Image (tube, rainbow, N blue to C red):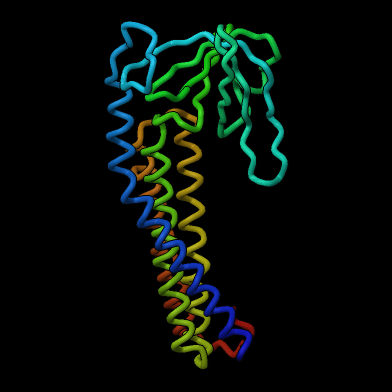
Length: 240
């Protein structure tokens, strides 16, 4: 019984952390949308900006080196670029493809500069890749993260607290376990929907449009499993 109580306590902690992350992500959606809109509406700079500016400038760089291998410590793919005057710029990316993995020392690339940061890199073949400073795609990332974390955290919290309060009742413990594991499915499907939206280039509204019906089905299934468990004559103590 003590082991089950500890497991449920861990579920509570994880659920609360996920809820906090989801709330923070949700609060960032509006700011991310505003920043993306600002970037799309930014004019082209009339001349080379000498300081961080809200206008957009296309700058030619040469590649000094590109590191696409992750060290296993959370390092991001990065490239060291150089301006025509030799000044180095280090640019980081979320992924190695499609541009960074093709970079070779001496290659000429173009970088889009906005607010003093390179937000996009384009190679000679026309391939484009966003850097970690790009405002594009952040609203969808924040929205997807909010849906995943809040749905998982809230459902897992209900299931774990239910399990703690009625842990001595086998039927209630089984029903609570069904709710907890459905919370994992809710969060996972939200992240998979975000991945599909990003890889296909769908608009941001596709995330709730696709995930919403799936979430309703999962919630209905969770309720059905819980009701079935409460109505059963379960005599199995191995409920997690």
